[in-house]
Image (cartoon, rainbow, N blue to C red; front, side):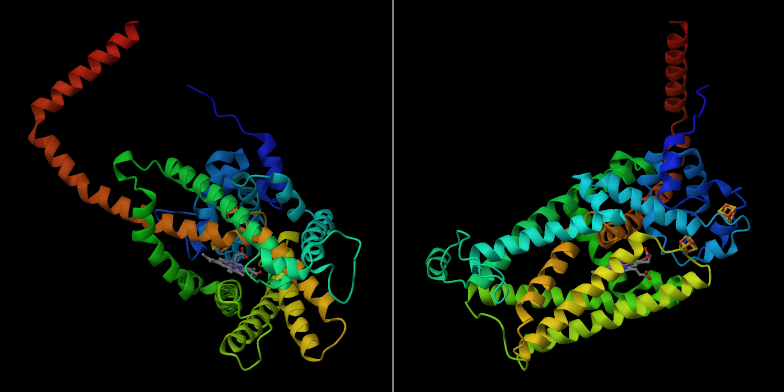
Length: 425
Ligand code: HEM
Ligand code: SF4
Ligand code: SF4
């Protein structure tokens, strides 16, 4: 019989990623009993603690339970050994984000404090280069006449009369969006294949991409929008409101950005638009919701940490403060512009840099939970159906087997003959 060997290197990786308490677990199962989200079919986090102690990386990183845990911290409070299972799962999620993506050096920059200036520098280079090329520098700050840049008139002729301002943004953010979409698609594909294999879903029950999307994505998104699992997880109430506001603010701001993009790039209605414009009003509502959501998250996370429910890693604070920076610089840009203040262009450039950092962080930071958690919800709904179908068919299969004993006996005889042949070889 093959002997199981622990993967010590993975165990050390988990400990270094923030799961330093993983070895304290003695498998009492208190955590799985108190977890409001664990079910009989998808039990966690006891199982993941065991897998973590053995360092079974493949199994762990393709486990939907990692993403179904809502990090309420209840299990951590009840664990009699101080093994902090909620925090260990958080560490495993960070590791999973790294494993699932490409260009892993970007993950390193986003997940280590020393990487912060590098990420900022990347954003600075892209935004200022684009502004220099299309606008001759950040207006009002640099007038780099010596930098070879197109004149605004030439830009107009070249690009369907777009203003240099719109071009400067498009030149950076359209390729960035393309890159992020490809990285996310690679990650989701890897995650999905891993989960299907790990769960041992038979080939007959596997579905194509479009069937999955049309059957399960809608219900999963409905759960996300309603924050149904946050509600289910009673202990997570402290996070529910702030997170919901934040999610809706992103949806509103995404809609506003898409509208401005079409209006400016396609129809030539260039910004800035007046404050009474309905899209502008919506944008300001989105900004207020964002600030409300993120400030309430900061307050509540600090309280939960003080109560010992969860510990906060660099990755946790990075995402929260980056979102705050996007909100604050956005609002300041608007205020400075309305005041005709000379700091407006610089603040605008800073705002674009924070947006760039947040956007690029989607496949590389904790922000990846946006897609991976949604994918785990889809998988959860799908695998529930698969289990129900298999269960429903089980009596039929047993009946069929009972009705055709001859065949079964023959098959059994064949099988034992084959195994006899094999063993005699
Ligand atoms: C634009 C969309 C999203 C944004 C800006 C966002 C932002 C955040 C932030 C800042 C936190 C940290 C909260 C805290 O520390 O208390 C967080 C946590 C969380 N988010 Fe999201 N989120 C988004 C989408 C989603 C989606 C789609 C899901 C579920 C499918 C989700 C599920 C969660 C859960 C369960 C947590 C708590 C666990 C943790 O902190 O890792 N989020 N989110
Ligand atoms: S993590 Fe704690 S509560 Fe969970 S099984 Fe291990 S010792 Fe028990
Ligand atoms: S943190 Fe909350 S949701 Fe996650 S495993 Fe523990 S009890 Fe369950």
